[in-house]
Length: 171
Ligand SMILES: [Zn+2]
Image 1 (cartoon, protein in one colour):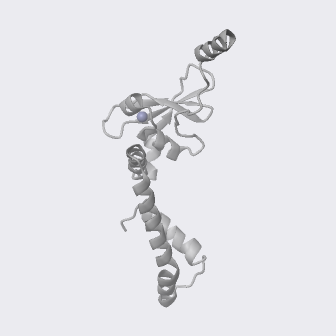
Image 2 (tube, protein in one colour; image 1 turned 60 degrees about the vertical axis):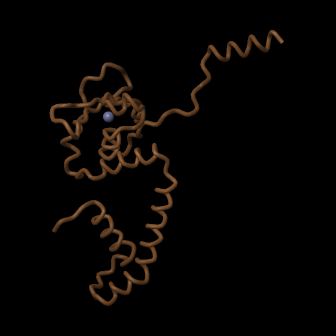
Image 3 (cartoon, protein in one colour; image 1 turned 45 degrees about the vertical axis):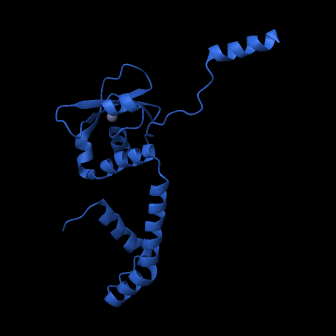
């Protein structure tokens, strides 16, 4: 039977949440559950998704697309696409090698420091400085590693604080 992550996860939900793991195979009960419990949830869910899609800015939409592209990759292929590099020069630093999705023989390096992804040497990360598909793939492979985020609370560089201090002294 043809299946994918969405169908599998939905089937799990049907079994564990809606049917509460009862081994009741009666079709009339199943139909009752689908109509009375599942359909309202399903519609509420679609409304919620549509609302958040409409709220998404272009950057957010691009991010979501990267994530979705990665979610489409079969779980079983992950170990074939990712490997831990043995030779990181720096302490605390781990490098994961991720195969390009589109071009054979190209491998990108993701630098991980203290379970946080710091950089990938692919063009997408290099030019856009946002989490790339390789990073989302690595997160699927290892949930303990956090995807790259741009730091929003950068410390004020020394130069600026020095200037402020001298200005204050002059007044
Ligand atoms: Zn990358």
